[in-house]
Image (cartoon, rainbow, N blue to C red; front, side, top):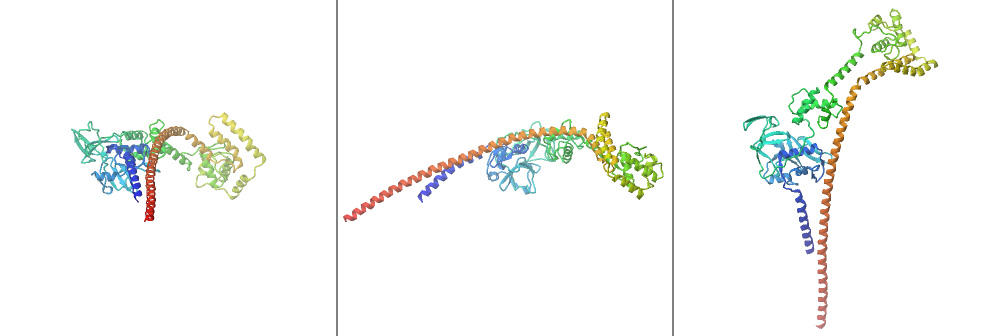
Length: 554
């Protein structure tokens, strides 16, 4: 029992000494400001820091490590430390003060309050560092003022490029103040309309003993809720391109968010409303404009109108064999409705179309010329047009369904290729003649005729040719920006990985050292006990021998 007590005492002594040396590395005495901590946390989010359990180095942190990497202080129990040191704290359900860089706590987790009900926290391996709104599933129990951070009571405070004025521990909003002879106006978010020339004379801090640590945070993305000069620049460019018609106020609100999403859609970018690397495309000469989008919509509307029934203004004066147009499609569809045309409309006026016109003209008392003149056209689309009889319909069907002879097959194969080649070489506008020659060769076969989709596709390709070049240029620039972002991310990951490996190595060294010390201590205790036991056994044996000799004498 005595040996066990000794061994326990040695173990506790070793653990105490080693624990002090390790925990001491987590309680650095550095300090900073609330606004600086808020900017530091935003920077961690913008740079995409990874989550690393136990990590407290820039680039790889856990929830408390995110705060400790900026200001130090108590690493393990920040809320309890603040309460025990008399710092202000309260429940989030009762409201959060207008103070930058407050600590937020819930069971097993801490975060940083930014402003406007937004917070930053290192959430986990799958999420990394997150920037999120407080409420709903993302709720917090308490807010508190960190012991290692100083917060202003009264005076100016700079945060994220804007100036704020504190009174009684909170920055003021929706009001004005005359300070040192100058009147300043503060909006709903507490931002001053004018940057003060001197911010040191009228400011005081609730923690006079702490030294300030200047944040190196640099904002890289802007989204709904952001503000500043870069937002003004974004709004100005969106207005130039026709996507934004609101006020240029530097406030990334609903109107700016909607306009930027419209720009992303027009440029073929991912539509998320976040102005990060997309700004390179926004500021480029190839950036799409809202007017281009409207022109494309008007073209689509005109195309739809062209496919509708023709009016008096679009009525052709004459259609005959060899013509190829939307007017021919209208005539063929109408002939099909009346029973004179037994195949799909192609837009090409061939022999089959001419025969159908002749049949219609004969049935309606007109001269059978096979040409669509004004009289034929007017009667064809009137309510007085006579439909084809059953006999005429049967004859038309029989003509179109007859099996093609060898002569027809020869005419459709070899001559078609020669005809297309000759016409493409001789004439410059290759699109329309090529389609016309194919339709001309195919029409005698009836059901084998071309669909009008070929002509429509050709037109669509030519109309979108110019915009494709622009889209290609925009896509190339976006890809370059993505490569740069991946390179930066790779560098961050490598530094984070190195920090994690270094921390893991330190922990293992500590464990090996403790095990070695415990082993030596155990060996010494056991060795001493073994010697004592051996002495006792020799003494007992000698005493027993002496007692036996005395008994013999007596």
